[in-house]
Length: 121
Image 1 (tube, rainbow, N blue to C red):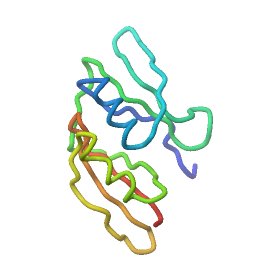
Image 2 (image 1 turned 90 degrees about the vertical axis):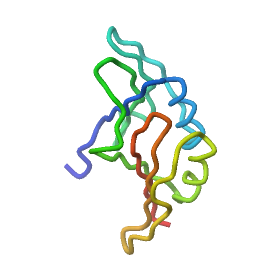
Image 3 (image 1 turned 90 degrees about the horizontal axis):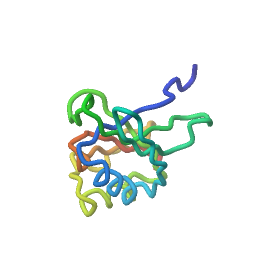
Image 4 (image 1 turned 60 degrees about the horizontal axis):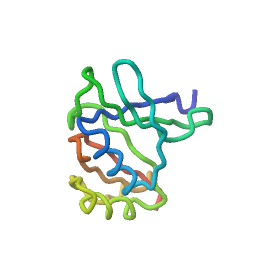
């Protein structure tokens, strides 16, 4: 398996606020899904190679800046990084050169999750 991640869920406490944040930072489109014990906004294309995911609000999930960090692939980290604070998030690590592996940055979203950005330029 070259890229085994198929799905991820980003915990929220305010689903609409999180949706607005991710829409502004990443220009994402969402599909609302309501389950018996949760509500979510799905994004990406789950039937294609790569990973799709969602923003989820439920009693069983809690946003966190500790633990696993999900990285979003970008054309240029600078573009999304420039949108983070104006959209209500906080930059933690600015665009950083990691040599042959490209560039990365990290921020916390409006819900308190630590999220990463990665690009080759």
